[in-house]
Image (cartoon, rainbow, N blue to C red; front, side, top):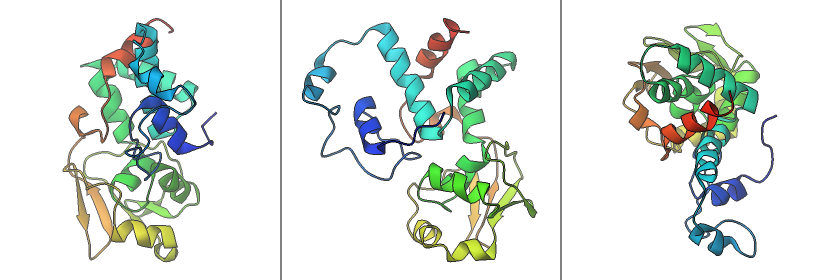
Length: 204
């Protein structure tokens, strides 16, 4: 199941701001929640703890269930090339993430709602499956009625993140095109992907 609880609490627990999860910042409250939050950061984490934290970053930012994460890891393993880099690329190429990174929604969660409610057009056709994988050359836009949604208007006026170099945005058409595949270092938050691989190596 996907997480639907307090988002800032998750980011404080992980010690990282996750733009796909929330636009809020943990700058003023960086410690984990709870009475002993500051002490938790000072405590040396076990290898399992480090692996779990890095895995949770991906899970919460991209809004995936554990089953989806395992399926994605299995696919990355079966693909030629570096498993970690492949997994990050696959995550960034999800349709809901592309809608978010293009600036149509304030968070990835809001972007998924746009997709689920059939507000998004992929290469001119309706696309309502968040996990659709965008390819280089694909173009997305949103329906006219969606452009009147307050959150969309606000997101387009002030995107949560600077648009990455792997997509081009047409202000006139309000459309975004993937110009190339995303690179691992273009994920918008710090993650030690090798820790994620090690976490699943022991559990798959």
